Length: 307
Image (cartoon, rainbow, N blue to C red; front, side):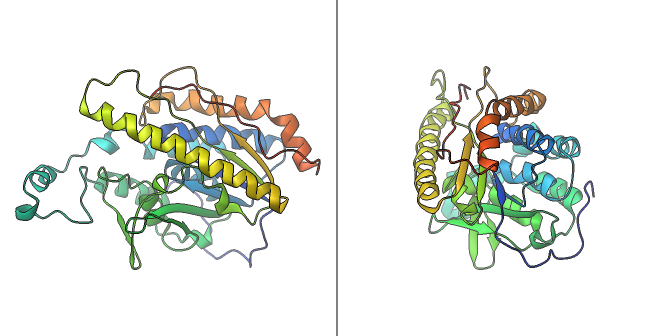
């Protein structure tokens, strides 16, 4: 295992004071480590981390008790381009002749053995409820399309469910449910931390493809629009709920000045720095929030990255 994990349950939980929410975005989600680095230097340590998709993957290292630097090293060992390049050759036959080769709920274009093996090597057999810092991982019920918040159970399976991008990776069986990527229901699940006094959330808006010259880019054009519209709608709802409940909410969407692929691990240092700088720009609002000064539940930097 590559990270320190408590072997015993946490004491009975009180409502969290400070929650950090790390949204989906592929490798971009690692920018959340830059945000956490700034928070730690300000003496702010969240007692709850909420993660969606790769936000769950990268947030799990910190929830397990690692430093930002250790979490970065862990992330580079877990997320790399070959993760999405493990082809399932039988999937071609399943697509071409589904009645002959079987096409069901567990279909996937990629083999997840490498990803699952890396996750298990890193995190071992740890229960979500036993992590030093509370971690909530969001996924989506594949049948109903509703969000599912995981707070206990096998950490590796929870992460695997949250990054189960439909069609690409197969869903995960969790009890009686089939779970897929959390991004399908809520790319930036702020409402999963509704019981926290203060919430700092980091997510990304995605830009439309520069040109549509093949089938995959056509699919990306539609999926990007769905992602952005869903995230914006959820964010508006979260802001309204925060105002109504008195929750202090700060949302940060870092600006990126270059195109970043979903699995472009070479961009990780740049992304962490982007998260750090975006958070530093928000320090006046952050300090006011911590000191109990009323601020509006906003503070959004629009992204400029291209897919």
